[in-house]
Amino acid sequence: MASNLETELEPGGVAAVVPSADDASAAGVQLAAETTDVAMTDAPVEPAGPRELQGDAPEDSRPRVGTTPSLNTSEATLNVIVAEHVPLLTSLSEGGMQHLLAGIRANVGVKAGRYMFEVKIVEKRDAEKVAGVRTPAPRNLLRIGFSTAGSSTLLDDPEGGFYFDSEGFYTGSKSRTKVGPAIERDAVVALLINLDAASPSPSTVSLFVNGERATEPQNIPEAFNDKVLFPTLAYRNVALQVNFGSDALVPLPFTCRMLQDAAEADVEVAPSTNPEDGQYQVVVPVGLPDKGVFDWADQFLENNPTFVELSDRKILDWAAKSGLLRPRAGPGASNDKPGMGFGVPSIDDLSVQQVLSSVAPSLKRNYLVMELESGLLSSGRKTTLKRFCAPHFKKIATVLMGEPSEESKARSQALILAAKRARAKVEKKQKAAEAERKKLMDERKRKVEQAKRARLGLQAETVEDAVIVEDEKETEEDSVEVELTEQEKNLWHRKGDLPDVAAVAVSRSFAGFSLPASSEGFDEILYQWQPAETCGKELSTYIHSLKLTTRVETLQPSEWFKEESLKRSKSLTEWRKLENEWKDPKKKEALLQRKRHALRPP
Image (tube, rainbow, N blue to C red; front, side, top):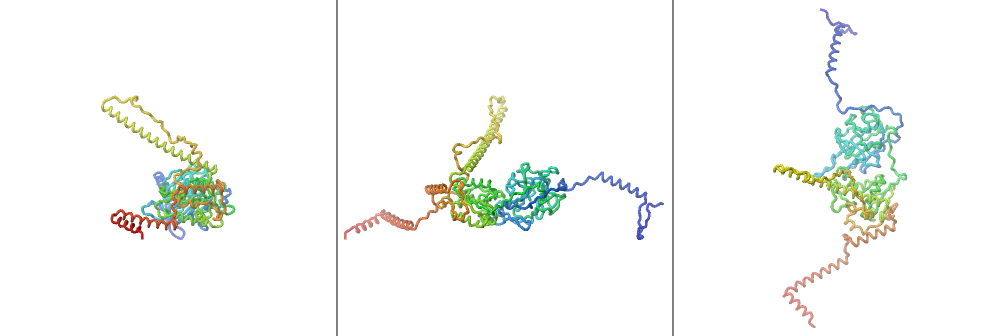
């Protein structure tokens, strides 16, 4: 029987058995058939996770950005801590600061192309837990996204930015959607922005975790088209490593340039806010309560975005943006001292104010110290200036008294009109809801009547019998025609929901109100609305009117008054004793005898 195997001698004398040519040919046909069968029956296996559409970045010979991307501390919240020699970012974590978000923005923004930057959570801190109180959740939070220049670095304004968060959500255009897994500690997070119209998925942002795509490309809201978008981080109780550099910590499945390797034409560098003379300003407003000082402060901040307001009302707003439930204004609340009332001890006991009073002077920033009562008192102004004693601070008092400027009056009237229109719109909605409710009740009543007629075999009510008045529906878009009255047009200031300073605080301190003086430590005193003489008369008139109408809670009697009052009390006690004895017949007779004896001549 012929064998199908042939023996060959390998080098070294080892025999190898190989198939013959016929057997090899047959085996090849069988193997091909098996391979063909497998290819026909097995479907290709898709890789797990989102499908990657991005390709490698093409060669780009354009000049690179000349400024090294970094974190812009001039726009950061006051609790941000940036390490200078290592790329670490953290925040203050005591005195109530552990409940507040920290926010910071990069100094280089993207307006075209496709670029990325990385963030790594290197530490998570345990925050204070308060039993029975809803503290902000999650306690450890990271928001990584983009925002426009001048917007909030806390990424709380949908018109100012969009972001992914460490809980796996994407927030953009007032919507928050679950798009990926939560971000854990030590994970390297890469945020890619694609503004290249020629590439796949243009006008989107994507999140990568440890080099792998974590989310599908998310659309950038249309409101941000043609705007410069700056990398922005908002975080709480975490420490971060931030990488804008040319080399990625963890490479992506495709090559993508880092922000530092961006073309100069694709980015925009934020202008420096450092003063040329090295002098940072500390502005202390001095004005009378309920005379438009807080509205002036809002306008001042709009015109001077580099200034940071130091006040209780801004801390209240900061806490609300950080997730704390904003409390209702309690009795005695004012714009100057609105009160915290969050139920969190480290915030309600004003620890945040104490921390900021220590931290703010150590940072080279421009400040607006908005404490109205303190600004009217010489002792309060001296205390404020004592904190900002560093030579790089220029201390300025701005006096706001008398008739305001035309710009301030126009703003006040615009605010009055806006509030009036808002109230009219609410009233309109309430009337529409009441009309709709009445219409439904009439319709239900008519149907009940028709059913009753049907049961009794009566003829159905005709349209002529039932008079139905159809009210024309008004949509929310319909404008509410509201105008200012002649009296409102003559107002200089608007009346807010809260007084500027509580009545108790005014009665306690108005006697000490005064205009600022250079001897208190001011480098400059500006009279914004009226000259010094007019402001002095305005202040004197105000104090005089309060003396006539205000109960003085702090008035203390003198020693002479105390002595005379004691003598009067003793005399009054003796007189009442004699009166009681006079009412008793026996004691009355004894008194008369003593009197007759005293009147008897010697």
